[in-house]
Image (cartoon, rainbow, N blue to C red; front, side):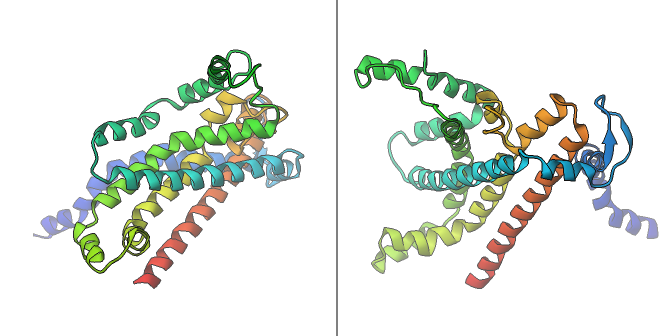
Length: 296
């Protein structure tokens, strides 16, 4: 009897064991190794020589490039997540309505999400190419311009295009996260509000947004993590050039590790990015949960 009770009590942990083992091998152990490497003196061959304390962090933070790269990363994340959330929310509201061709519209919206980021970034790089790009070719044929336009005359213009591509590929994720929340709302709420004379904006702010807040919170947190760590878009379009002016933390640490052989400093950058991400995501989630509690 005792053995049966013991087995029954242990059964949930037995079922969880494979997941725990996978998390340990593929998530926790790599994180531990990155932290260990960031605190170590590492040769160009990647061999750990000994304990270095915070030297790698000091080299990174005091470097002339880090401040600019960190600013780029924060701007990139805020712009892409902010605008993709607004546009995705608006699209979700549209796709939640009944209209002819809704299934086709949903398929079109999801298409960018189903395509490789490298392919999409490569396509957009081709579109804005000043010599043979699709955008210039189309505008020339329509007679809207007399000569090819350089769409990326400055690093800032390049960075703006990268942000646009980031927004374009993340809109579908936000749209379908919010759409799943919208479809779970009981139609009777809107019917009662209509009877009481509520307009579109009153329904939006008093019914829709409060009831999809949990979906928005989840999509925003996951979107922050995804965009912050996004590598293919920036690397495919500019590789962080010229002179690191369009680098984000992810592309910058890649250069440090594989171009310059500074593995310890690259690990330190990774740890800094990880901590920033944890703090930002935690603050956003705590603020959202507190607001929900206050609303209740």
